[in-house]
Every structure is written in C-alpha cells, then in structure tokens.
Image (cartoon, rainbow, N blue to C red; front, top):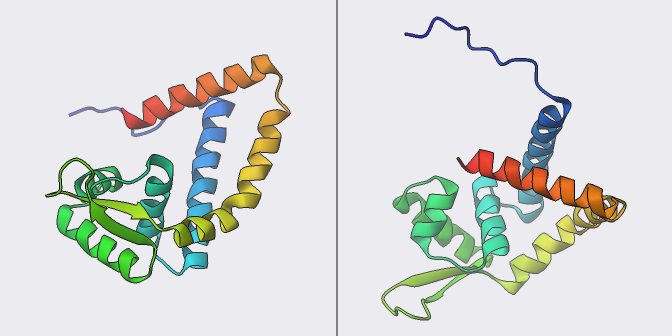
Length: 147
C-alpha cells in the first residue's frame, strides 16, 4: 500500500482557473435545469444532444455514465416533457436515434445565450496568438479529462 498522503502538489494558477470554470459550468447546468424544469442529468443529456447531434440510447448512456435501463427512463421522461424525440436510425431501422426537439433547442439557447455571447466577447478580445494558445490549452485540458 502506498504510504504517500492523498494530497496534491501546489497547483498552477491555470489549473485552479480550469477547476473554477468546471464548477461554473456545473452551476450553469443546474440553473438551466431549473429553468427547464428538469433534473441535472436530463439537462446534461440535452446538452450532449445539442453538442453532438442525435445519437442512440446506448451512446447517450455511455456519455452520461449511466446504464441502459436508466437512459431509457431518462429518454421517456424527456420525451414526455417534449424535450426529445425518438426516430428510426437513418441506416438501421432496428435502431432508434434520440434528438432534442426544436422547442428544447430554443429554450436551452434562450437561457444560455447571455453566457455564450459573453464568452464569445472575451474570446474575440484575444490576439490571434493568445487565441491559439488558449485553444491549444483547452484541447489539452479536454484530452486530460477524457483520459
């Protein structure tokens, strides 16, 4: 057994800033879910569908880190609320695809628009070199989080 204490070394300012962005993202998701009248997992599912487009229930379950029976209940709940729709897969009629409805898209965008525009304004204030450095850094952060 490792006798090392469960502590981290002193972290770089950028690392701490990333943690703050992650926390702010969780807070924004919680506010959006309250606005739409759904729970945080349902909101995460809608966000994934908005970001990646329609997907099958198994892929949605995998991305959310939940089991197939749970994603079925989640999809049923979102479908009943009018936030998602099931359609036949375009290439395999035995499979189902889940997509956010236009109504859900509008409601989500209406809520997120101020945050998205504020982030875009901050991004546009960067010089081209700063923009490249930030984008490269954020890609590295995403890779680290997905590892």
